Length: 291
Ligand code: C2E
Ligand code: CA
Ligand code: CA
Ligand code: CA
Image (cartoon, rainbow, N blue to C red):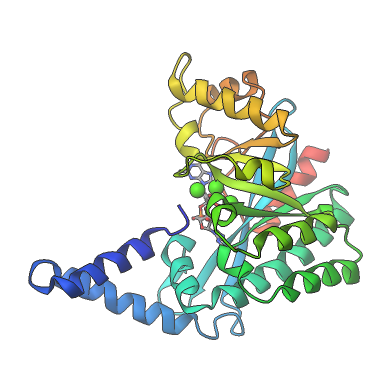
């Protein structure tokens, strides 16, 4: 789940290097060229101001109120137009540029949530996505984050950091200490894409986590009496027992929303509520929901 399409394409390309006759098609060649191009173009994209964030509301299921939002990265490429993270995050991870991009995401999100807390919703929280590779960088990065929040006069609770299960399973990862450092500063830690791909739950007892996000794959087939519903209920009960609140991802219908609410899920995110949107659109939504 950590690596999306771009990395799968990379795998195929590597494979094709070994079995050139069978797999090296013009289409793969074009894809390989595109990956090289995008990797080159990513260099300097932060300085050139080519990234922006869109924000997807996260809604309290019981009340319908927008309590927070997830910041999602977009790349406005000068020639190719808007590029979504599935097409460039894995490339940025492979080249190491994800660290610089991640720092930009942090700064931009902190500035944005500060503005919203001042004018619209004093308790508003923004969630940001963090690549496991950002935890391999210097530990000092996280002290800088805490210092930047202090400089802005923002409490840690204004931000949540979304991580994936893979990070918690890595051996000898400095992640545990870094997560604890962020958490001591009040920053929430959310476990993203829960339920995809890992069988061990032992990390749940080892780490302090605040929020669990049920992956869209469990939500999209929710029906009364379905196995997916049974799984969602079990995940929600377990998370609550462990002191976490639960967000359901990819809620696309009212029926899904109703089943999740009935199952005790706390928050929902998905096209049923709202798509990711630019900051001014979210501001209009927040203004209306406050009245
Ligand atoms: P994610 O963290 O699981 O984010 C949720 C993705 O699901 C977003 O795709 C969002 O637009 C999409 N989504 C939301 N609601 C629905 C729905 O109801 N139905 C469907 N079909 N999709 C929905 P997006 O923006 O393309 O992001 C894809 C992934 O890229 C994210 O998955 C996350 O893993 C990664 N990503 C996004 N922004 C960042 C970032 O700033 N840093 C890093 N490291 N990764 C990021
Ligand atoms: Ca996420
Ligand atoms: Ca997710
Ligand atoms: Ca996902």
